[in-house]
Every structure is written in structure tokens, then in C-alpha cells.
Image (cartoon, rainbow, N blue to C red; front, side, top):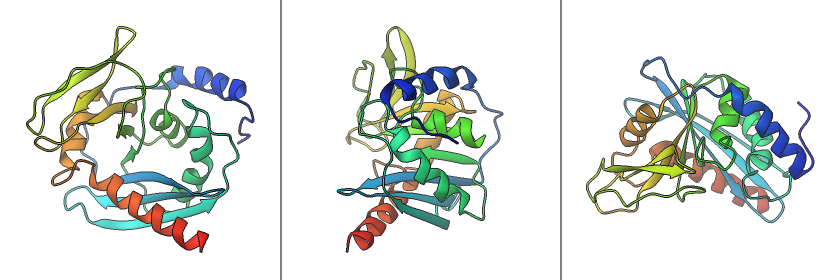
Length: 218
């Protein structure tokens, strides 16, 4: 695949591909769930994928790729910095996950095509985004109890949910990527977050990416 080299080219890719997104699923329960995260150094990125058993939340396989980003740092276009290394990490897996959980956004994006959408389209695997902060939209704070949520709305459209994964802890921002609907994505993030704010998929991939970056940086 030829990757765009400018912001204008990247935005056109997003515009061209977003019509392929299907924010709906088949209702099947995932058996293997993958977390994807990227750690940044001065001139390196470490892209990690960890595959967890959906029932036990134990890591069954992992892969990490350290590379130099080929695209500049542009808000709304982070996917083009991260995707090449993430796709290489996914290809290195022996298992095929049933769901990709990205540290980022899906439809909760200015052009409705964040990293989770892009990964879902390129791989054909259901995907969703779980952001630590929101990129676009407005919301009111959900209740303080675990499981409380409010809609994340941008330009009159519901693009995600603000979900409280632990009592009294800051919420996360959940959005569909591809082949999963928003209620299912919100339900999955709670299943994957039994003890901490962030899902275990993100936590495990974050640890792996940071460790690989430290090792590569000496």
C-alpha cells in the first residue's frame, strides 16, 4: 500500500474510505480481543498488539514493531503515523483476533474516520476505539457509578459514548470503528475493564510498547 505523504493526501484517503465503514455487528461474542497501542520516542515509535482471551483477560500472544514514523504529527491524522507499524505487528501474529480495541478513536473523529475505522477497513476485523481524551464533540459527565454513560455528540450526530468504567474515576470515550455498533462497543469496554479505568487490552499493549521503546532507545 502506498501511504500518503501530505495532510491533503491523507485527508482525501479518509474521505474516500469512510463510506465503507459499517457501524454494526453480527452479535457474535469475541473469543480473542486484541489491544493496540503506540509509544513515541524522539524519532521512533513502538507499535504493540496484545491478544487477550476475552473470558480470562489473559494475554495469549503479543507482537511489537519498532520503526520510524513516515508521516508528520498532524492532529486528526495520527493513523498515518501509526498504521504501518501496527499493521506489521498484526501480520506477525499467529492468532487472528475477533476484535481490535484501539487506543484512540473510531467515528468520534472530525471526518468520522479515526484509527479504529481505518484499521477495521484495512483488516476486515471488527474494531473499536477507546480514547483517554475526546477529540471532537460535546458531552455531559455521566453518573459516578461504573457503567454510567452519556452520548458524545458532534455537529448534531452521536459519534460515541462517554463511559464510566470505574466508580468515581474519569470516563473514557468509546466509539465504533468498523463492524461493531456503539452499544456493543460500550459493553465490551466494561467487560475489558474489571479493575481499572482503561481496558486490559490497552493496558497490556501500553506496557509492551513502552518496554520495547525503552529497549530500542538504549
